[in-house]
Length: 100
Figure 1 (cartoon, rainbow, N blue to C red):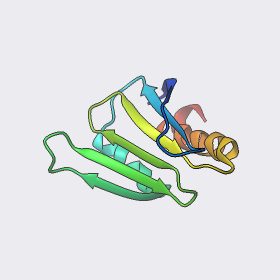
Figure 2 (figure 1 turned 90 degrees about the vertical axis):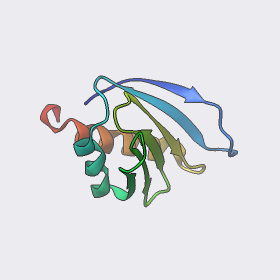
Figure 3 (figure 1 turned 30 degrees about the vertical axis):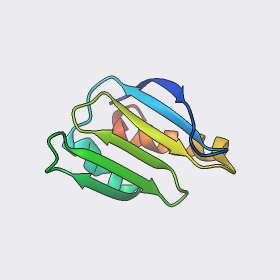
């Protein structure tokens, strides 16, 4: 599962950065559960379309739906450029360990 694109979304909170990530494959249960190694994961498997949300120790928030090729990630104000670069690297390594 690799990131193939990002789109900047309108931010509701001043100073945050919200990106819509596009992946080459859809989110699977296995990929979603991997996120727990990076922070707090809430996974709602009983929803008609299983939904997940994630929060890291640096307040990075992620929301998505199992089976979708996208997810939304909100990077906090402050050191958002550093946090963005570090988290994106961790995410890519977690979801695609073979190429790293």
